[in-house]
Length: 88
View 1 (cartoon, one colour):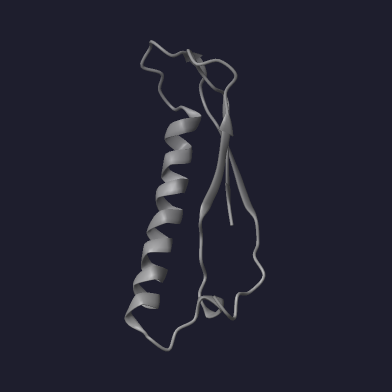
View 2: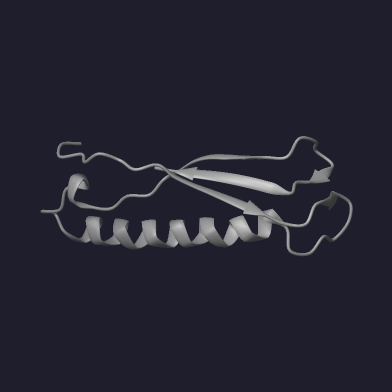
C-alpha cells in the first residue's frame, strides 16, 4: 500500500421531487445522484486503468475515488426529497 496520500471527503447532496414510491416521479434526487455517482465511477475506472497499465505507478500518486456512503429517505414507500452520497 505504501505512499498513500491524505484523503479528501467529498459529500454531494441532491434534491428532487418527492412522492409515493408507487408512482413514476420525475426529476428525483435519485436520478440526479445517479449521474454524479456514474461520473465518480467513470473517473475511478480511468484512474484504475492508468494504475494497472504502469508497474511503476503507486496508489499514493493516483487520484482514487471510492463511494463510501449513501443516505436518504425515511420510509421505504416514499421517494425522498434529498439523497446524500459520500466518497473518499
